[in-house]
Length: 293
Image (cartoon, rainbow, N blue to C red):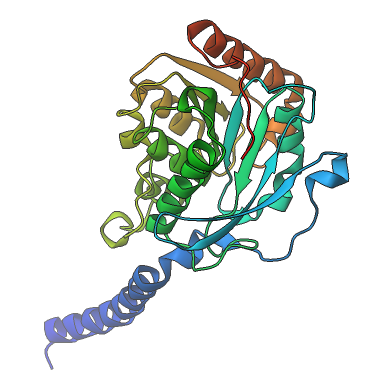
C-alpha cells in the first residue's frame, strides 16, 4: 500500500467512526424528538384550594375527542368578573405547578381556565404538536360554548411552549388579547441556538411556529421576556414583538426562564395590569357578564 493510499485509508476509517454514530444519533432524534420537548407529569402536587381559591375540576374534550382535564377558577366575588384568562402552560409538569400564576390573575378580578395538554396531569393521550393545537381549540370551545363567554372577553395567555400554543390559537380565533411570555420564535430556531454545531433544522418534525402565527394575530399582544432567560434568548422575545401585526406592547422582566415572573413580581404585575386596562379602553373586555356553564 502506497503512502497516499495509507493516508486515505486512515481518513476513511476515521470518517466512518465519526459519521456512523452521528447518523445514528440524528436518526434517534428524528424518531424520539418529542421526548426532548414534552416533559409531562401525572401526579398533581397541589390545587387552587391550597391558596384558598374555589375551583371547578373540569372534564372536557379536545376537538378530536381526546378527554382532557382542567380547572376553572372563578373570582368568587359577588357578580360577574372582569373577564377570563385561558392559560396555556409550558412543556413540563402539569396545571398543579401553576397555582401562583392562577392566584395572580385571580387577584385582578379575572376568571381563569387552565388545562392540561393530552398526556399531562389528568388528561388522556400522548403529547404532540398537533395534539396541543387540538387541545387548545377544545379549551377555547369550552369557554365560548359551554360557559358562553364571548370571545371579546377572553385573553389568551401562554408561557414558554404555551406561548406558541396560545399564539397559534389566537391566529384562528378572535380573543380580546394575547399574552406571550418567555416564548421562542420556533422550535427549529431554538434548537439551532441550543445546538449550534449540529444541523438540527433538517431533522426536526416539531415546528411550533410562534412567530408565523403572531403575524396572523389581529388582537392586541403583550410580549414578556427576560434578558436573563437562560433557555430561550431575549432576542426571541424581541423577534416575536416585531412579528406581532396588531397593537402590541413589550414588557421586559428579570430572572430566569422559570422564575422571572416571580422574581420580577412588581414589574410583572404592573405590566399585566396596564395591558388589561389597555384592553378595557379598546373594547368590551372588562364589561361585566356572567360565566355560568
